[in-house]
Amino acid sequence: MILTVTLNPSVDISYEIPNFQLDDANRTNEVRKTAGGKGLNVTRVSHLLGAEVKATGILGGTIGQFIEKKLDDDSIKHDFYKIDQESRNCIAILHDGKQTEVMEPGPTLSSEEAELFETHYLRLLNQGVQVLTLSGSLPKGIQTDYYVKLIAHANELGIPVVLDTSGVALHSVLSSNTARPTLIKPNLAELEQLLGESVTANVEVLKNVLLNPLFRDIATIVVTLGKDGAFVKHEGDYYSVSIPEVKAVNPVGSGDATVAGMAKALGEELSIDAIVKHGMAAGILNALEKQTGYVQASNFDHYYHMITVNKL
Image 1 (tube, rainbow, N blue to C red):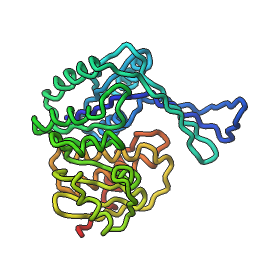
Image 2 (image 1 turned 45 degrees about the vertical axis):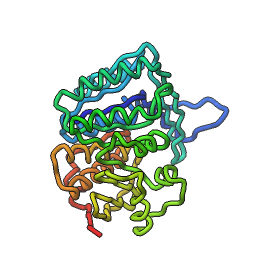
Image 3 (image 1 turned 90 degrees about the vertical axis):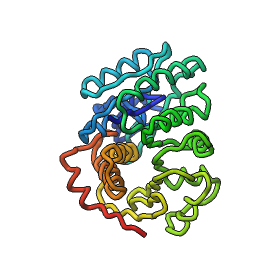
Image 4 (image 1 turned 30 degrees about the horizontal axis):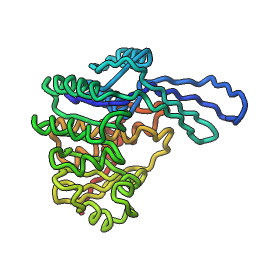
């Protein structure tokens, strides 16, 4: 089973407004409301790909109840820790070929709530979890090393961890001596933010960057390059990944779909080639759909076989 953790989930609301007008009333006939947050996108795509998956995280209020109902409607298993505060909404306005987002901050957690979730999480971790995914930012009030604690528990149980976060939360994990994720998935911008230096897609540049001590003892690093595929460091080997050209409808959430595909393959103990191809194929499928964090699994094999992984 894959256990997905989303500490700051949301209801993702999208409005299609072709001719959006500032400082004026705008109407839309196209509204979508989904259980959102990076980890819940991972959950939904994992489920659609046929993996056994359970979602956990921190929910509260009527918005939290709405998220649970959406998951129930999709027959997705979940077991969240509940708080009294409201979970958040995140709004996307689709207009003029662009996407403008308004993202609420979500609740501020107390140290007691953080500790109680950790207890809740430990109980779930001991229920046959084969792969753990940790996605997204940390809620306000939680210490920046919180992911370190969650990963350390998984490490003690020998559970592979896929971590998809950025900024201070990622730096805290990579700086730790007590917790190591199995797989991370940074893009070029996240690497630049992490290291404080310019990073390009040049193979030699990426090889040198991934030799940084921050990345020690991480089995697999997948640097996503958008339409240009990915660059992968696995153990001591490097790989270049090429993907087919597609006409993207909505690329938002493709990174989360990529995590879902890789987590599924990791749980099945597949080869590094297969793990990467599973991830890339799922990311492509998400980009072809209007709905964020959604794939047509029937098309998976078609795109999977169009992806090439070359050892350098």
